[in-house]
Length: 575
Image 1 (cartoon, rainbow, N blue to C red):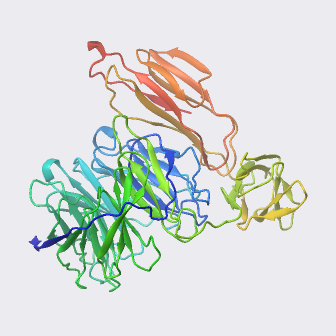
Image 2: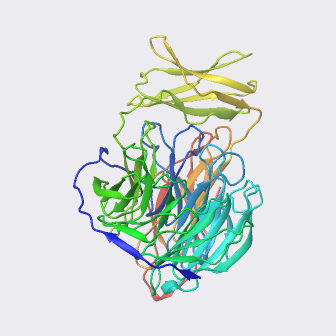
Image 3: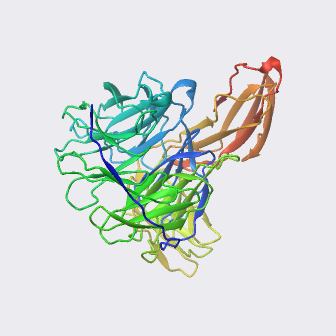
């Protein structure tokens, strides 16, 4: 490997001022957030939020006004050794199976889990791929490394004190399944990785941040050999960096690098970089890049405890005084940008990484550079089968109480909703349609107000042939429980099918010596003792098509006794 030396520090004061952002709004994501991605998961043109947590992922669907549907959709992911997301985790959202819908890949503990999007923001069960290394910190990125039209995955791992850093490339077979094709060593301490075409040859290269090391911290560039393999890393000095982002900061057509810290390495135009220039900013945690002030230049936002530091780009890749934005929480780390309220400016979301007690929240602040906009009426789902009933929600503003919904379809009578419920604040109308025997095709969704006036949802609803419910249940929680200390587990369930599901039952079983209680959610309607296990029975009630229900929090307590120390036992759930 080669090492290119040089760095400078620009000492800047900071400005304690608002940057035209709204007060933070907090959302519970059940477990501690470690990573955040932003993508339009349900095809409504609005960015949704995916959060990587201790237990898997939480999904918050955007309602269109910068607020999100609560509770979040929850999916358990067990990657790597011990079946948990060990150490730092990473996630990306990208179309992995070529259907135009963002899927999710999660890395942690030496493995990758791929969750394919069913097209409505509800995900299939994860499929796992192992690197064969199982080191403590794992990161991943995606890109068309083979230039074959598919998104492939690149995973980096590092052991204790920067040991054994490794890169593994998983090649996409075109359908969202992967095979391991390339593996090599990296510069010591590679804790995170991104992809970007640094030398403008049309192939995405890799950049790693090497902050977990006893030696000098660096950032490395690995050039794609145009076959999905990567050349030896070229190292640049970096002051303790653990994250790197790539963007064209000075409008020269080449991507530059931004390190948490805040350090900037400008591209020389050939994939090599000038020495890092550093800008002081409070906190200087993880970073997000967007044009926050709409001046045509990409700015940098860094998480900073309960605040966010935003550095304005001068247009040439240099930055002015940091502006401080109140972000809520206590110790925010993960950060991402997206236009959540669809008014044309970039908003921010941060994940609260506070401990003692652990935070289970993200915080959203909306950029007020531009005024709010009314996006009109929007659908929660835009398709359903004609073999049953389908319940959908129409989001909007000031929908009058007593309004009803109907489907206006060409070639058949209008379909009237059998159940209509308007949210107390007028922000949504839930409508259930009996689609049995309806002719497949596209229909307009119409709201009929109490005064007889009508409003038409811009997006069409598609009636599909057939369809079936697909009820699922999952368990989220750590695979290791410390005796004598209560541990929270979460039962999550939903319906990923094209039609509504009637009442369904599911069960959870665990050894009888474990004490239990329900912290939140529906309560069991059956408690049995079977073969030394406590078996709890739950009935869900009806489940709407393409929906995830609120989680049931189950508190479990293993007795603090020698008899149960280091004892292995099984918690099972089924439906």
